[in-house]
Length: 208
Image (tube, rainbow, N blue to C red; front, side, top):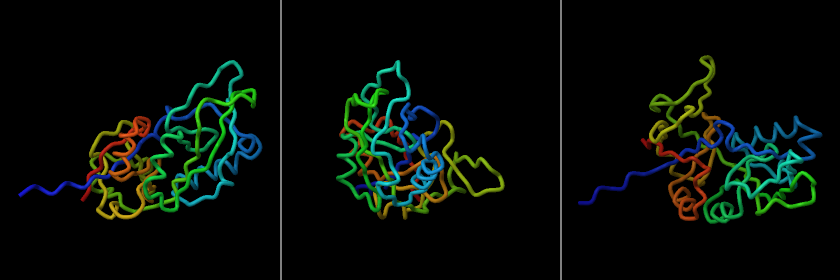
């Protein structure tokens, strides 16, 4: 008898470090930093948000640098952003209460478009599936707080999740984790087929 396929959940640590942060700003970022910071915080908590919480236009920071086509997943002006190719994949799966909102990227002159088409990503979903006591290499930065995050260098099977992660939307934030989000195996495979998975830095979780 063939052995049943082991279920798979993936964690992304693209939010760890600065590699995904790109040099763009928005008028709202300049004029209302508190609002922009709050919008990003709510997004990475997995809250459903309307388009008003995301920039519709962003501008390159540096006058003497021409911005090229951006990665398939990155942060611009405080908002997590995806390419058109990545957005196409995301529209084909269960986004739950998440959403994609168009955003235009411009060079520093505020007139010349940056090559490509882009969308702000509202994660929009929460699950409580991470098993902190059974995660071999989970980071707890504050001893007196129940706050966890991926290790600085994450490998497959560093993080354990319960089987409830297999139900519901294909992309989500876990209520016990910061600086990370999770995706289902169908989404991970679809991102790979579309050749847009690399910046997501996906690692397998232990599913218990």
